[in-house]
Image (tube, rainbow, N blue to C red):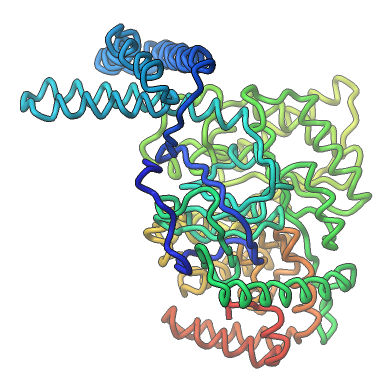
Length: 601
């Protein structure tokens, strides 16, 4: 993106997106966008020119190293000569003395920062080559563009890694990967707004876990604002107000104060038992990303950890965490819970959850359907066994359970259990203590696992329904793609019938069943889940726990069952949607509904 063309959004413009994390944030925008290259034209002082050239040459060296690394992998893994020739072409461009000289001359003569010098030189090449119709020269220009973009990424990355937020801001980006969020100083992030993403995007999931208001799926916001613009992020309504008027500021500030008041009231009830008016108890658990989130679960009244997403251990550094490092993190969870349950999910990197990882240099054409989750673990048995050993060792210090993600066949579950048995035997031989037997469960996330739920139940101790992926795979959508976000429909009769089928299979087999997807943290959907019967545990981001406890303590399970029974007779999403919302309003009463549901009902 060329910021010289971006003069900031007109005052008072409201941009509609997708709600991702509730709350209202008001503050200055900070644009962070490596996807579209947020390029600022900066004039540098004469004494800074040589340092800027050194920074540029460092980006060239890094790009050369990246290409060499990819080339070595390609020689082993990719058939044919074409990929090697393309990489060699890019490497030669990065060594081209004419290109390098022109960029450095632009820095020296025009006193431009390296990013802008790259952009300027590329535009000059584009003007020259656009007049030539020969296909070879057009392809040559594409090669130059690819090489220059690699340099831009390295320059932007070096700036971002060296920079830190000096004051609280609202972070605006095209998208944020899990790896991006790990670099954030969350104390300086008031809110998050991204162009990409759907209702269950990772930016939203992580924002919710950190109590940061967030709106995703804004499409072009990063092109329309600039760093320093005043923004309002309303995570409940899913809107961003750019450069608000005085009236808008007062309106949202009042709304924010009401939100904070309700949150304070809820916080006072966080440690109460989640028991319905007719005496049924529901366990409310927390989803966490790392041991650093343990303070959040205590603060919000969680009764345990229903989902520990261990993949973030693998994202926080370029190298794979060893057994000792993983053990220390898992042990912290076990000891912190003091006998309460903690469910540790094994490695779930791959597909949409994997930004970059050592040894994964070649992107898959359709990663959400590729080598991810349990498939990756079974393909890398040594890595998988290290993780299982670390979890088993931690189980000696508390009530830990193991959960495998994305099980789609009975054979996958049986193979994973066989590797677990080997890990146990190894620890016994070494005299290392662990809990045995230890409960082992699986994520139900695909139509295939729903259809064989009875067979799977016979080989594990519990189910956890991951509604985010179940909806994605059932509705055939990319749940992170804002263009098809409208198809992410938890109230689709197809989804609801699948949920009922899994719950019934778990009941018949006598295995526990919980829900840990986004549906679990939404009171409207949660009441329906409880009404299906069998679900007596919900796991969600810590921020949602007090509100969910308040809801459960205000309803009768009998009313939830009646609502679920009626929904089972309906075949239209809109019919179900309208009926469920009206039923929830009737069950809770208007005052409680308006206080607890913000704009989502």
